[in-house]
Length: 239
Image 1 (tube, one colour):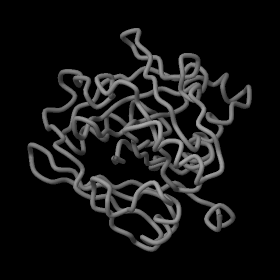
Image 2 (cartoon, helix red, strand yellow; image 1 turned 90 degrees about the horizontal axis):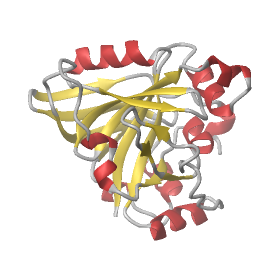
Image 3 (cartoon, rainbow, N blue to C red; image 1 turned 60 degrees about the horizontal axis):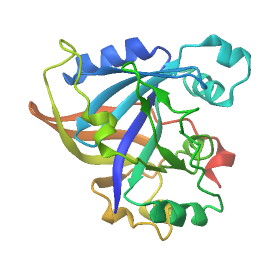
């Protein structure tokens, strides 16, 4: 089964953007650590037991100086402010990962977010996951990629928020708004899953690809979280 899993909110300043998001929604957050290889800082805002927003920005300027492609992507896409850089699905099995990989003519690389490249959490653990296609190839197109997380007990949405960051609690994502049309998303997903079979209502606005907003059920009522979508070039949109 395929699930809506998380959203990457790319920011100019991971701390300010997370603080602002929690103030806006009342939902707490916690420090998710950092990506040593990519120079990114990471904060987590849980929206349900298995859904979250990850807020990220470049915190290590050496990653930019050394030309790291992930760091450069974040710098480029946040020149005008925060944006929903990526939206991500989750597979239950590696067979589903292989199906999606075959549809996009790529292979599943278990090292994509493995021990050497995964997020380093502040409690000493590593946030292990496998993704396909890579964020570098899917997110700039405004399209979702697929993750497999070997141990759901380590799912980022299941860790407690830091006291004082927010008392409102997310109880699930009810809908998301994306660009393009249902048929275009269906073509991207291929034989993996139909858009109507995901665990969230999808609203289409016909604009450029990418995520525009989420409707979240919380202990304090329904809220909408809206940010700019990732800026997709005409060449990427036509792919």
